[in-house]
Amino acid sequence: MDATTLDHPSGPSDDFDPGLTGFNPGSDPTLFSSTGGGGGAKYKLMSPAKLPISRSPCLTIPPGLSPTSFLESPVLLSNMKAEPSPTTGSFLKPQMVYGSLSSTSYSATTMCSDFDTFDERNSGSFEFKPHAGSNMVTTDYNHQRNDQLVQGQAQPQSLVSPPLVKSEMAVSSNELSLSAPVHMVTSGASAPAEGDSDDLSQRGHLNSGVQTSQFDHKGSGPSVISSDDGYNWRKYGQKHVKGSEFPRSYYKCTHPNCEVKKLFERSHDGQITEIIYKGTHDHPKPQPSRRYNTGAMMPIQEERSEKASSLIGRDDKPSSIYGQMSSTNEPNSTPERSPVTGNDDSVEGTGSLSNRMAEEIDDDDPFSKRRRMDVGGVDVTPVVNLSGNHELLFRL
DNA sequence: AGCCTTTGACCAGCG
DNA sequence: TCGCTGGTCAAAGGC
View 1 (spheres, helix red, strand yellow):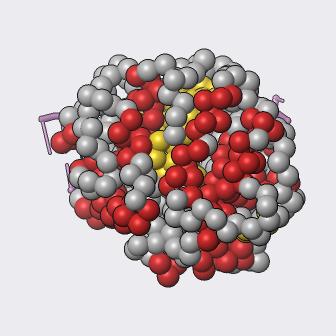
View 2: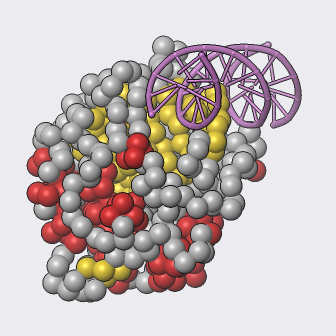
């Protein structure tokens, strides 16, 4: 595959519907439900991308009310069947990434876009209550992200609407699904114009019929969470799932005996809006040299890594971007794998996040893994939902 | 030559 | 039982 296609690992994401047909939020109750516990590899993840992000553009948090508190609020975790604390603790990190950029001033913050996933279900009203139809703590992450968004707002640039990548791992079924609604808003570095405050406002307007906004933002940054996670994948199918704006691509791990699958949805501009992992790798990653092959989006990732770097630079948050994730896990593999370095891992890093997560989870006690990872600007927070499924949230 | 992507068709689950 | 939908298969083609 040549460079030209690198940013489209899943192939031509063409059958994407530019029209962004109106998606009726909540019209599909199943979207947020995680059936992961069920037979085999069932899972259902709702990706922000699927949500009418445009719908409830903004959320206002009263001054003095810290989003963070929401995040840490037991309410958010109420759904969590087990191991609340680790999960809870995980919330902290994302803020490091984004929060660090600007921690204060979210007095009357506006939460947009990603938040919508949560928001829309609540008819635009922001309520901190457990997911109703969903055992998944996903929304919690959204909150979290909201938090970040809130804080992010203070900072005009980038991070405005960090893509949320949700990862769900059905431990019981040995299924790891990673959903990555990646709204790639490029980090401010590369696309300040689009990624900055405007971004928020746009998101706010998404609702107002400017449906393109969500995607536009993505477009603003070729960014993209790469599907490349260090493993080799072979695409075996692609389908346009109803209710989803983007075609869903199906990948299998090419490693013999490894039946891990992943699927992700990619926007027309190449950004991955959702990544879902099924299963976990029971084998080490292939040689780095080969890593970027299938889903690799080197150019993008590289670009992304740069952005990440820029972010880091601004924030001096070492843990940002891939750093956390990569650094925390895979002791045996490229420890230097940090966004900052912008090395080849950066390339994979973005995409790798998904697999890394899987790997990470896979390698150790899943529960112990419950720590935040930040990859390619994506914060990853593994959690466990009521179904007993693990979830990982990625935030870009 | 090998591996991967593409893509239409097929199959299974569900309402 | 039928239709819809999501997931997978497999042939064809490309790199």
